[in-house]
Image 1 (tube, helix red, strand yellow):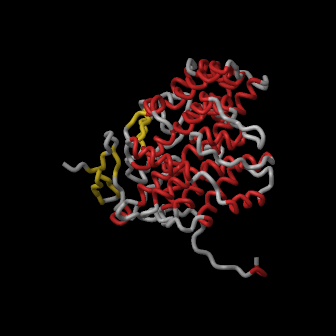
Image 2 (image 1 turned 120 degrees about the horizontal axis):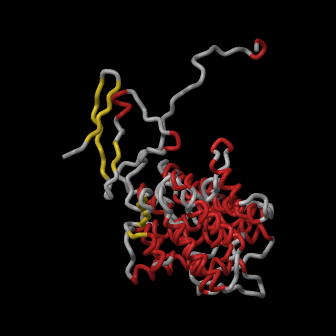
Image 3 (image 1 turned 30 degrees about the vertical axis):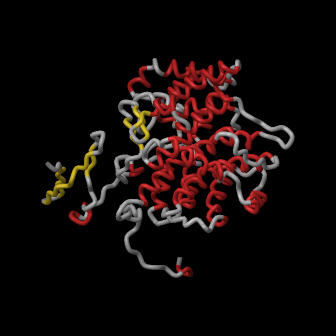
Length: 427
């Protein structure tokens, strides 16, 4: 039996279909709302708006659940790796050995950049933000590889592998450019994460081969960021893709969206807050007190999430990984000590308990990146590399829909009503 919702406006009542997802979540289909009533749904930030039906990622914020294609994130964190997770997200199933070998080989084979492409980095100032270079260069890929259809058709497998692989190389080169270092060529003998670290940190006469625990930690970070439903950047990719823009252009737009300080840049804000506490500029008590006063605009960085009303499962995994990596390497991080104390105090504070404010992925993400050796100006770039398979998966899923409609939200106009033009000499 089809379920419906009734909407009454003035003397008119209409019934709207209720759509049920595979996990029991419900949504009211308002596709015909304006045509039938003249009304639109006003929802700033799309907080209560479902923009698509998707089979890629499931988030249950009430219970702290995250899964990729139905597989819980903690299982993937224990047993999978980033390349396999990329295949899972993009193609919808875990690959068999032959599929994984073929996919991995394709990604490895496409890591190198066209030699002429590298000259474009010279046009950027040495202090240019790596995210700016990353977005520009990903978009530029379409110019250097015109034989790719850029349509999501028969060449999609090649497009996806190129984008996954070359984004990593562009990211490494962006950092090298910002530091004034020479570019380091890719090494196909290394893993995806290991090769990135090699390109990032090697010098011409001093090759950097990351220890296995460092490679594993970076691999984990990338996996945990691979997708998260319709976040701001993923929504951007879908909106740009709805215009039939190619995969490279759509994902370049996603990078720009991710760059924002309250999206991909939030990890940096957490580190800056922890540093302020560690330097003695404010105590943990003062920090928590400021967070309780909404009127001052201060927010406790790394706590709370629009979706999660429980502990973000990614935060637990990142915290455990940070403990493991720092212990294994026999080093400490004073910011990690501050983070642990801050978390302990906040989780006992009635205000944070009542408002269901728990650590999110950003809280321990920067701590683990610091342990890996990732420079701060590369934090958001790492996020972009990790999120790339999710963007590709969403672009492909939308492309496969029978009738993709270009994204075109409505608005409620609140400006002046009609007024006459006044010539400049009479103003």
